[in-house]
Image (cartoon, rainbow, N blue to C red; front, side, top):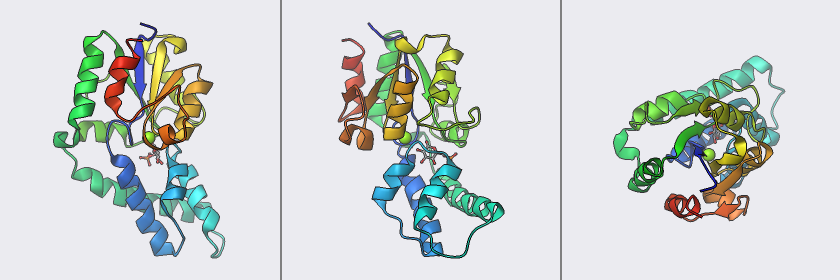
Amino acid sequence: MQFQAIIFDLDGVICFTDEYHYRAWKAMADDMGIPFDRTVNNRLRGVSRMASLDIILEKYTGPALSQEEKEKLAQRKNDIYRESLQEMSPADLSAEVKETLEGLRDLGLKLAIGSSSKNTPFILGQIGLKDFFDAVSDGNNITRSKPDPEVFVKAAQMLGIAPEACLVVEDAVSGAQAGHAGGMKVACLGDAAMNQAGDWNMQSIRELLDIVKE
Ligand code: BG6
Ligand code: MG
């Protein structure tokens, strides 16, 4: 087996919170009269909250915004987003994700999270995975978000495993680039898989069980 550890992105890989991110940004953008759709949204995958706001504001034509006003907009989006997260429970962990995680663990692999989100600890608690992972590297312990490799490099360090022995699982093109920049192989789902950004481009997360046995 070429891998000793799997590092999972969170939003859009372990759970469908990518959809909640989209809806919260959409509410904020509609409120401000800024055009925003799912194509723009795909560019926000893996990108930090403030960098996401800057991408959305590319289409903003109103008076210049101060840093303080921008932070208020990001806060407003996060408040809407957190309301959706409140309703999540362990029932929101899909059978395919749960069974895949258990299958990988049974193979003796270390499992970690590598997410740009500062809401990671809260989400893991909501879906019943608070103490499941061997390491959690997230938006709270990084200074540069994907496509910079920092979040994955830190996850590998926390596990004490060399990057070459880590497989990253991503739904974001920026995340796949981050994994590769960190010297890791990448298996993609969703938007990143559609863009052929991975070494493997999967239809279902269950395919990981075969990939790690190659
Ligand atoms: C990433 C998402 O996981 O986290 C991005 O793909 C999001 O869309 C980023 O902007 C930051 O999330 P949060 O929860 O800290 O606002
Ligand atoms: Mg993601």
